[in-house]
Image 1 (cartoon, helix red, strand yellow):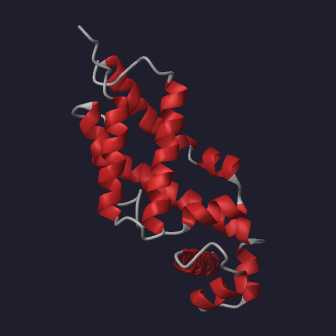
Image 2: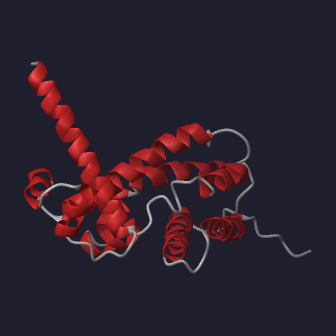
Length: 194
């Protein structure tokens, strides 16, 4: 029994090393190969393939891990308290959204495609949607746009900020600030003309 626990712990450490190495490789571009990932992880290709059957599996595991970290961050940020606008502001400046996973979105689009990447984000975006709904119900956010359109816009703008920050065209903090200003401006209720 103890031997199984040791083997499982070794396997978990190896998987973590492979995923961390893949993330470092993707920071340089989505063209990373299994050979590059194995070298960066300090293991052989056979070891990588023993845990992941393809780059798609590696990218899927990385996205799943990053989104699980985002879920933990939601709890730490306490997005249910305060105004909806302040919750959005906290969310958009959280370190998980920009900078930490440099290159992963582009790798996800390359290896998994837009539908799978979007589906993997469903749970996280459900939490964001709950904040938007709270803001709409409380009169903080506009209600004249369909909720589905608002959430599609949030998703698109968040990933535009990620792409710009990953490419170095915007600093991480600048991208978060611009994303926040843009989204909160879009969510703000339309003032009626007198």
